[in-house]
Image (cartoon, rainbow, N blue to C red; front, side):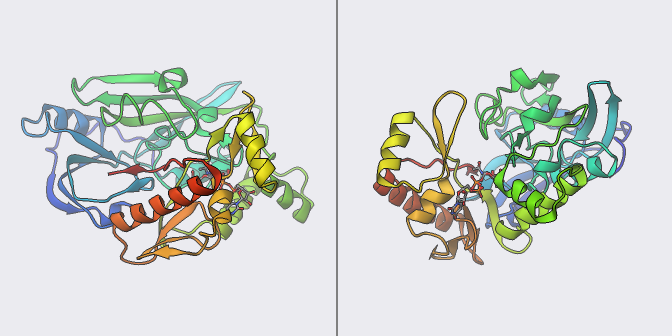
Length: 350
Ligand code: EPU
């Protein structure tokens, strides 16, 4: 990690042709980009916009490739965001503001903050992907979502080349959703994200698995580092490390149903894991639904359902994107057949 670099004199952008994307998606799926450009700075985005050939071409923005299912070669111009830098921008009385380049690793950013004594991100440790991708799907884990720690971001418009700043409201964050997955999808490149870590720090310990850690360790006043370590232990125990087993984290969103629907399902399946939301609707655990349909540990071709968490689909070695999609459709059908619920994939499918 380094501080944000000063602007460097313009160097031409490098256009790669026929670039393999296998190493750039955590599922390890085979795919080739017709055109790939590595983006190291905001200036690089502007150079792409002003380039005679690339300017008009439709784009695909690639961060860490951790929320992506590639089913074919990519004809779009792939912009691989590699903008680096992290610094404490401001220490206000009500919050620390940390400014991070979009290409930094999310987990390393969480670790850097904990190491610097800047708490607030620890519940989101070990989420794969880059900082620039974090607002796109409003990442979250163990009771904290990106939107709870967000100040603003800078992005470059891919048509005009203009830079603009957006606050949380403008990002229209939802559950694993934002304006960048909707109206602004592939229309701008997020270059810098500013995180807001509220002061005084209040630990978020409401999740059952964190309560269990408190009971096990008898540490009733954990600091941010304890929580960081616990979250890493919990995730390592049940989520596959993409460095060893290709995957894209949770494959489906947890479905939200009305109180009546939930009551109806509980009537038939009293064990179903469900959480009451503020608006009176219920979130159901998709992992539980898939598990109940007997999918845990099963495979179709070389794509499989992870043994320790049914919500995660894995590449058992050499799988194609088509095999992953075949498996996901079979799961959707059986969950729909048994519960009448349509599971919606979380990753972007290309
Ligand atoms: N469950 C089963 N069988 C399974 C998997 C889960 O019965 O095979 C049950 C669990 O026992 C638990 C419930 O389902 O009672 C929920 O499971 P878990 O606590 O593992 O969390 P999740 O709902 O599966 C969500 C996020 C994760 C995030 C965790 C922790 C989504 C789609 N997933 O998973 O995010 O880390 O909560 O906050 O919201 C991701 O988005 O990629 C991701 C990993």
